[in-house]
Length: 393
Image (cartoon, rainbow, N blue to C red; front, side, top):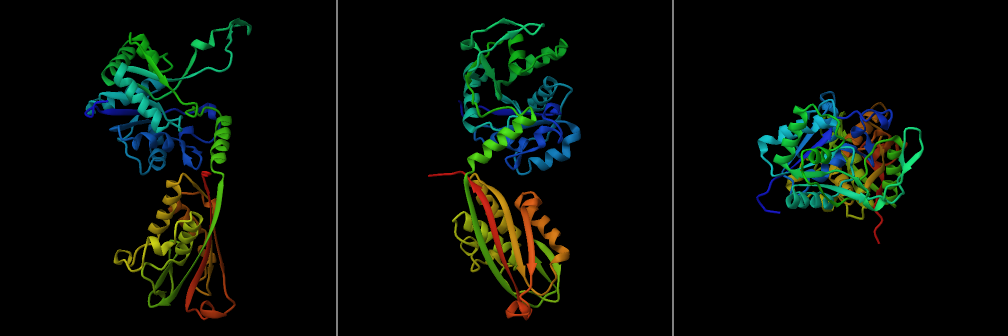
């Protein structure tokens, strides 16, 4: 592929996904702990040979879309049409100002697209001008008549299952879509069919059996089980932290500003709950401790907000291909009282960690007036974190 070649992507995400059952549009549901559309877009946004990602969404889904793909690079979404074909045309028209050479058209309901498949799609379009990923049919296929009887058995050696991303020279597929719209043709099931109708020769390249489309509730169940089976290395880490009281009018606990008659003596904001939790996560990763990653001798962490420490630890899990299963913090103090703020703290930890609140526990106890916590000289915290990682020998 020429270095100057620009590759764009149309990510089609305007459908309602009614066959997937209740729970809203399937592209915004969670699969493996992440929204389907995030997984589908991430591979393109991070691919070194992709210049522009153009999402096409239902205007009613704009809030869900923004939340689901936070942190990923993409163009402002354009509104979809009444059909997939109309939505693709809208995405192509939105890309016209970028003047890409190659365009990949991908369904957001296929969240397991790999970097390798994207590279093959770009290469195929560069060589042929129009190409689709295809996988061989392994089952015997029957052609059924209107009465339900078998009419024919096609030769499966010539049959292929078409996938996305389908890849084309941008100018030719845009012109084909425009011609189809002008002729009021809206019955094409994929972009390759439009290319064929327009007289283009459509090549094939190696698809990926993992690049399946989520269509039914059973698809979600099966893929959740598959993803969970890949994360068979279940680890638990523990953490502990303590900070003494000093002058002040509040303390930070589990990411929440809590009014108090004292403050913490600490290099950062002194959030014992988050510090213990960071140590627990790093312990589960066998990745040092909070002091080795954020040394108190470094002035840039002076007064730092501890939510960035927790986000960092969570990102370390993600970089290893893992997921957080459970986070738990126990706070040991006489005052301030934690009970009234327990759920606020749980929600804040869940927000920082990008996990559901049902996976976060915050508990509190006193030391029965014994020791430094009993004398109200400071607060201690213990934490545990359970994570799941891919099993590696």
